[in-house]
Length: 154
Image (cartoon, rainbow, N blue to C red):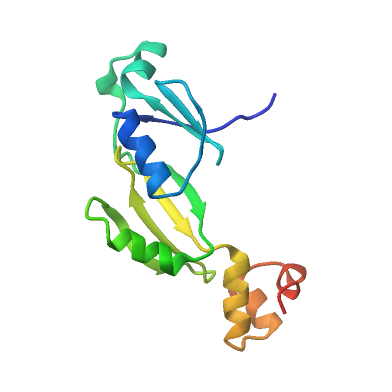
């Protein structure tokens, strides 16, 4: 058996497709009308069609459950944060914050209230800490990354 991708249910396929293309720079792999898959390895599916497929009332598909998220990484997190600030329609779970392991992340909702997390890659975190003068050992302890991984960037 092979896992293919997560699929999230959306109310408006065009609005959601536009959000993922414009806000998160995702590229469409296939567009089947009620189902759109992205090169990043996830898909969106129109709520009315999906509810028919699984034979439940569409009102039983709950929005803003806060029980999962789609996670993305962005090399230039500061530029991405500026891009988000220019969009009035973004509802934040939280503004940018630093995780206990040093990674900076931001969480917000997509148009259907699925949580989106965008964080900086751990390579960037390690480079930032080493650039601030932390030793390899201090960086390993702070980021929880293996020493071999950290040494690649020293």
